[in-house]
Length: 470
Image (cartoon, rainbow, N blue to C red):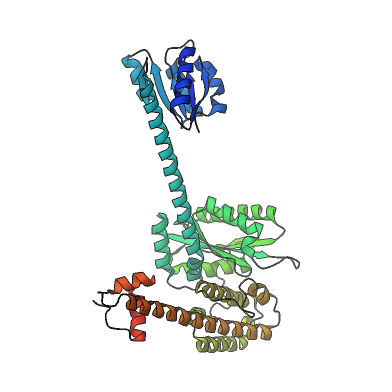
């Protein structure tokens, strides 16, 4: 329902407009009528009209000055002048006030009806456009939030993050060309449940503060930490002070929402192709910095001793899992644990080495979920993290880890083979249904919902009829 406010010193005009609106216009009503601008201004805030019909010459404040003050309270209302005076100065002021229409008394009924209907239609279009813009923005933000965990993974694993960051900047309109990594570490008490960390109140606050106050990419919760990429070009002393100040304020807000112990490590500002080093620096700052918030500058000269070098094949491990190569996964892990056992300082008993392995396991499980791997009695996506964190014995951890990662690779391979079989069956059915017609590669790909290159690879693998290049 559209609310119409009428302001005119003649009661007959107010009554006439009310009668015309009631009997000729749907979804609209005169919410109030006033015989002076002063009286209307006293009520404008509570009435919140959509349309205001205003006389010019009234006792006290005139109609034009009334509109000027009303716009401060109701800037989105549409204003129409109804006046018996056709003066250039009035018309000029009306234009300056962005008045929608200037009608001369006596106003014909149909003219008034047409003007109000036209205004209502434009208000509706404006509201629909605004809603469409909001929905589009929401979808865009949701799409970016889906991309963010994978982008953080590419940084941690150093898997060509430069191109991924470039694409993200282009999508979101960010002009900075560099950034740094901030790592939030959280430590739960013994009785605190450790499962869906991203649903914890503190994590929701963490996400909200970051997204409001910084242009950033938020990673997923991984064991006891979360990595964040923050866009920033400057790397001088003042920017480091600002980064530390922001982190300290963030910790204060988080402590209000939980009884969890937090600390933050901040890496240096890097170019995109070097950003993985900022992540390693943030971890070093966490271990060697002073206080709850530490910048890598405070740990200058400290060399990595957290097992990052000994776990040099982590990217190969994740690639083998995603490829479904169970034998390769088993080989990589056994070699890896053998090397770690020969260096006791970096074995599974080392918290940083174990956390690195947990990070890889989280990524592998997310990859399996993304590839539509189903759960079973052994594989549960909601409980594996807590199960892994409860294992204290190093040998038990190694055996569990190897068995789980090999099993994930086997499940992924089966899921890929099942997907291949479905697509081949669909392709054969499409060819059969369209036998005798000219079928192109693009037509087949569209029917399957895959790219032409994928459909071509399936066709070659299954020795389908040679019609792809027609």
